[in-house]
Length: 73
Image 1 (tube, rainbow, N blue to C red):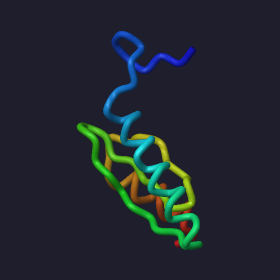
Image 2 (tube, rainbow, N blue to C red):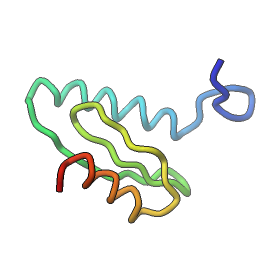
Image 3 (tube, one colour):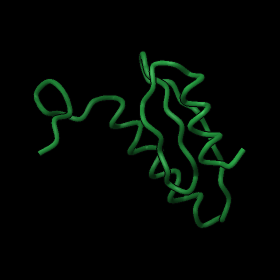
Image 4 (cartoon, rainbow, N blue to C red):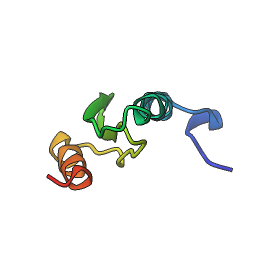
């Protein structure tokens, strides 16, 4: 069982991942890689339209680096 935080309920960051995956699934049919960096509270995370989601980072610069590494640029 995954521990999602207090009370084992999914938090806002988990919900953000689910939203990003849903958008990625919709965009995957379009065949493109669209990278974005989102902020959720104290964390930033990179996401791609292909469904890839990077780890939550406290530094936006690290989330951007994750996105660049995934996107090849």
